[in-house]
Length: 103
Image (cartoon, rainbow, N blue to C red; front, side, top):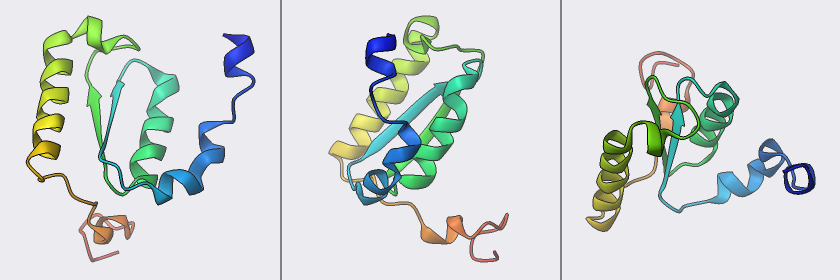
């Protein structure tokens, strides 16, 4: 792991590339996998075509810990993308306010 993880750039150093992405993206984190929560939020904020799902009571191996919930989320994501129902994030939600457009 040290040879791979240490040699690659930080996720946070790739922000410009993430902001340019238009590929439908589903980010899934387990709420008990603390090291992935901030990167998950970062990706959600940077990729306009992303959604974030945080599975409760899961760690890093959520596909093994909660396979039914994980597989359902992935199937729903693929179904929405295939049906053309996956769109870019509403820019008004980025205003920083609690109510869209009121930031």
